[in-house]
Structures are given as C-alpha cells and as structure tokens.
Length: 98
Image (cartoon, rainbow, N blue to C red):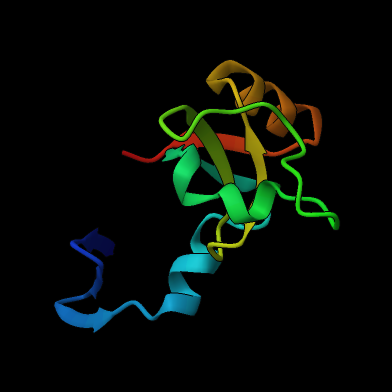
C-alpha cells in the first residue's frame, strides 16, 4: 500500500522523499494551479517593447497567475473565475493555491 504524507511516499513502511520532478509529474500536464499575485510583483511582465504598460493597472491590484505543475507561469488574469474558465477551456484542471 502506498501512502503520501508531508511530501514523502510511504510504500510498505519505507519512506521516500519526493523530488521536484516527482511533484511536477504528480498532477500531470492537465493540472494547473491558480494563485493570487500583486500587480506590483509582475509589472515587468506587463510592459511592451516600447516600455509602456499593456493594460491599465494599479500597483495594489490583485491578479491571478495560472501555473503548470512544473511551476511555469502560463497566464496572468485579472479575475479568478476567468482564470479557472480559461484553464478549463484549454482542457486543464485548475486548483487553487493559497
């Protein structure tokens, strides 16, 4: 019997820690994570080639970041429901990260 507890796999009494790769593969390619992010923390990613913001946004606005199971950011969205809908539209399974 295999049991997971606190980032470790217990298999017949033996403990094995999960590597970063193990965690990434755990959810597969279809699992994505949605978390909040302050706009001020991602402003550099919202600037076009001419140094202008691509959208109107305040530093204290909250955005929603969609990440693959490997941690790569796939999208920044202004609304939580839209982040979940976009993930589902692309046949992915979104979950919240707190």
